[in-house]
Amino acid sequence: MSNTIEGKVVVITGASSGLGEATARLLSAQGASVALGARRVERIQSLAGELTGSGGKALAVPTDVTDVDQVQRLVDAAVKTYGRIDVMINNAGLMPQSPLERRKIDDWNQMIDVNIKGVLYGIAAVLPYMQAQQAGHIINVSSVAGHKVRAGGAVYAATKTAVRVISEGLRQEVKPYNIRTTIISPGSVATELTNSITEPDIAEIFRKSYEIAIPADSFARAVAFAMSQPEDVDVNEILFRPTRQEF
Ligand SMILES: NC(=O)c1ccc[n+]([C@@H]2O[C@H](COP(=O)([O-])OP(=O)(O)OC[C@H]3O[C@@H](n4cnc5c(N)ncnc54)[C@H](OP(=O)(O)O)[C@@H]3O)[C@@H](O)[C@H]2O)c1
Image (cartoon, rainbow, N blue to C red):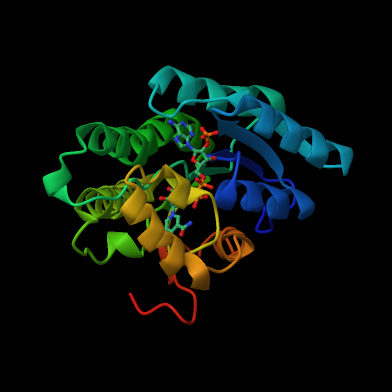
């Protein structure tokens, strides 16, 4: 695996909008081959078409990360098409926040299935390839909410804390295989994330708090920074916020 972004094969879950889409654009512009996974097929197909049209290499694979077989299919497609996998970005997620007393059990289950199990399925899909290659990089997306919890955000914070814990365990386990691991924990970034909030009053609170949100390429640059380090440098965690964000 080279030290630069050019020529790397990168799989991105949740590539149909927000952070995943911005990352696909930046990495493709820098010469990476990208495999895009998400449920909104037309979005990833049109993004792949756009990137290919600009001279990049991009592949769209319909993927629901709550289905282990679909995640494996995404990764297998990348390896079949490009011959290897250098970076897995487990980014798909949602944030339907609400106080526990509202008993939004479907929202809890969805967050657990996508934000935690989806990340685990991504890890499971790439590990055999990366172990065989004796190289690879797994980037998991946590959040400021993986570092701090506040009332109304218990389940989301729990899922993002789980991502950090899983990533640290993974980091220690994959040392013998020369695999790097990075947790990226953003603060408020302007994406479609707040659309996943199902309670109208909570959505309104978040819309206000996201007025200070920063553009999604802030995240993409953090990914590029971690990826472009020399192979013996493992950037394990990046936490960033809008300069104006207090929480
Ligand atoms: N924006 C922020 O302020 C912020 C802060 C901290 C952490 N994060 C994290 O960043 C990640 C990306 O979110 P975003 O901000 O970019 O929000 P977004 O614009 O809503 O994007 C979320 C992505 O996740 C995908 N997704 C959701 N459920 C999925 C499923 N079951 N299977 C496959 N893909 C699924 C969506 O694609 P489809 O709907 O097409 O499947 C979409 O591409 C999330 O993990 C989020 O928790 C965001």
